[in-house]
Image 1: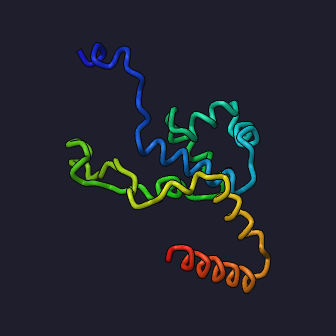
Image 2: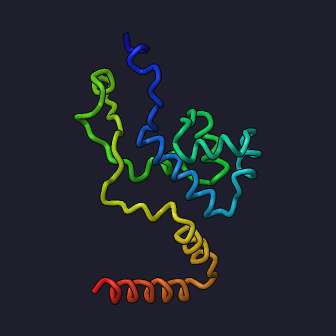
Image 3: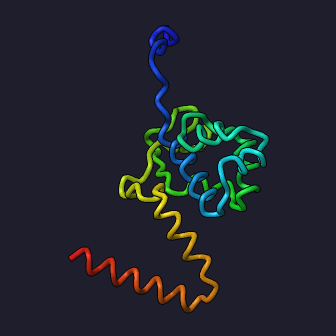
Length: 149
């Protein structure tokens, strides 16, 4: 019965898969890795990395672990920003004490996947002098306040 209901319908990417894929992309671009370079490190094709980053394909636990090592982040990095809703978890998951993450923070604007944002962050962290970085940050905050008025 369930198979009949889902036949003919394209699978919609789960919000958590999309979020995790976005975090992979964010870190990959921040480090200056191409999709091809990351794919080679994982033994995959760059098309598979594209699908991961869009959330079209789910990333297995073992691949997520490998990604965390290659991208030098803890596995939890990929889930930062995912909001947990205890009420939305399955009964089995709640019995086991597991909260199912089901939604993304709605207050987060979708600027994190824009190339300009990634270039800005990458350039900022390439500034070797911490005092200069602090001044740049101060300048950006000031400019941001003046344009919001």
